[in-house]
Structures are given as C-alpha cells and as structure tokens.
Amino acid sequence: MWIKKRHPWDLPESEVTDHKTYLNRRKFIEGAIGVAALSVMPFGKINAARGEDFDGLSSSEFSTDERLTSFESITTYNNFYEFGTDKSAPSALAADFPDPAKPWQITVDGECDNPGVFDYQEFIQPYTLEERIYRLRCVEGWSMVIPWVGFQLSEVLKKAQPNSRAKFVEFTTLYDPEQMPGQRRRVLQWPYKEGLRIDEAMHPLTILAVGLYGKMMPGQNGAPIRLVVPWKYGFKSIKSIVRIRFTEKMPLTAWVESAPHEYGFYSNVNPEVNHPRWSQRRERRIGELLKRETLMFNGYGDHVAEMYSGMDLRKYF
Ligand SMILES: Nc1nc2c(c(=O)[nH]1)N[C@H]1C(S)=C(S)[C@@H](COP(=O)(O)O)O[C@H]1N2
Ligand SMILES: [Mo]
Image (cartoon, rainbow, N blue to C red; front, top):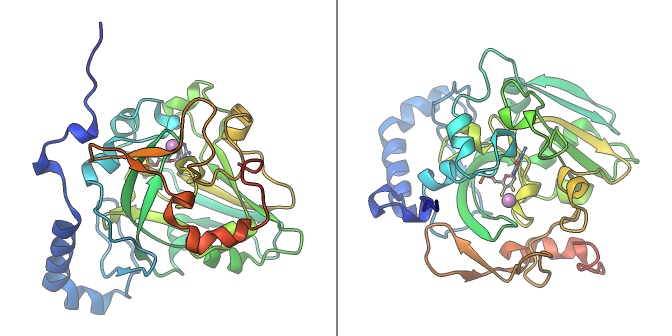
C-alpha cells in the first residue's frame, strides 16, 4: 500500500514561525529579562542545562536575513543516520540524546602542540556564543535557513596550536550503539567521520554550533555540539562531535568511504556539478512550494571562492 508521507512543508501556517515573529519574540524576551539576567551572566556565555535558552546572544555580520525555516521543520526533518535513515527517525529517537548521565568529552589531538581532552562545559566555556543565521543545502536537493548558536571553529584550532604538519582537520561523531540505535546496522562505517582542509576549518564562516533558535541543540540536530560549514553540502556539517584531530593527510570521510564516485572530500555546493543520480541545479527550500536555483558555494562565494582559485572543481568535487 502506498502511504502519503507528511512533509514539513505540509505544515499549517500557524505552526510556521517566520523571521519577524522570531525577532519580535527575541526583543520581547530581551526586554523583559535582559538587564537583570545579563548583569549576572557574561554576554553570550552560558551554563544552561538542557531546555534552557541562551541569553544575550549577539547576531553575527555573517547572518542572512532570509526567512527562517520553522523550528518545527528544522527539528523534525533531519538526516542523522545514527538514529535511522528516515527523516522522522532522529526526532522520534533522539529527543533525550545525549544521556545526561554520560559525560560528554571532546578530544583535540593530532598534529598540534597543545592537545587536550575536555568536558563539554569546559570545552565551550572560553568562547562567546553568537547567533549565526545560515543557509543549509543538503546534497539531496532541499535547503533550510537555520539560526544557529555557536562560535568560530578557528578559536578552538588556534588554542590547540597546530604544528607545520597539520594540513587537514578530522572530526568524529560519538560511537555508542546503546544510545544511537542506527549504529547497530552497518549503513555507514561508524563512527561518522568528516574532514576539512585547514584553511576551510580556519575560515570565519566555519562554526561549532551548540544550539539553534536560541535554545540548546536538540538531540536530532547533533547535540551537544556539531560542525556547520554553510558553503558545503549538509553532510559535511558533522553532528555530535567527540574528537577533533589535526592530520597531515586528507582524512577518509564516512561518505567518501561508502560511495567515493558520488561524494568527494570537498563537496562544495555547486549547481554545475551534478550528483551522478540527480541534478544539483535547483533545490526545495523547506516551507516553500516552488523550487529555487541553487547558488554556487550556497551563496557564500564572496567569502570562500578564493580558497579554491586554480582548482578544477569538477575534479575536486
Ligand atoms: N553524525 C552525523 N552527522 C550528520 C549526518 C549524519 O547522518 N550523521 N547527516 C548530515 C546531513 S546529510 C545533513 S543534511 C545535516 C542535517 O542537519 P540537520 O538535521 O540539523 O538539518 O547533518 C549532517 N551531519
Ligand atoms: Mo544532507
């Protein structure tokens, strides 16, 4: 039997939070609790327990002012294969992820002079969080606009003092089949791995995100901390990170390992280079009916194109 799936773009208008409503709500909240709360808490820093909001976030100059995708869609239409391959599986299964009884540790190591192992709170404590509203373009041909909360990855990398052999950065997701039921099946080679060239990793657009819509990162979006690289296809933005490693050689990423003819290491959004099984010319912005043109580097070319000058982007796809 054929069952019609309920897509996020089928949502009634009442469930869709648009940009203006969100900003007005933010202004109201800031106005109401602003002065008292902020005088105790340093701007943008938090010690929020799950469910608490981030206060006093400043917005970044890198933010787009495009209409935000609704919170509902961002948190129910997900790719997170550790929780299953259906779009609805992560929100159904990751609501309580990660288990608060299990400490979350992040290792920074490899080709650097100042490696370390940090608890989550200790890891993010030095950085000032800000809001970054970015487009996210999935390689499958859909896109969203997401208001992330995070900080530049470059700040973490600088502190670790990479040495002269550090040419790439590798990222690893947690491996814990008890918490992540999708890892009990060999859909991908677990744990999920991703990588960036060191200049891409140091680029000011590249962030580590710990929340969205002013809230702690939901499990399905990669709690407690995930990468966001807005000019690359969504799969580069690896979720639930436990390790950041400097390497001399190009890391073997989960998608390159599973389908090297379909997914390359760079995976910059590029409407000129089609996926072997579908076109990348257009995309469906979740919440909109008509497809739109996909932009080179997902519209971030002014900031990032320079890094690829002289490279054949068909070869290095
Ligand atoms: N560990 C891990 N990270 C992942 C994925 C995944 O399956 N596992 N999916 C990727 C893909 S394909 C996309 S499009 C984005 C989706 O992020 P979102 O669910 O927060 O929109 O996460 C990426 N990061
Ligand atoms: Mo994706």
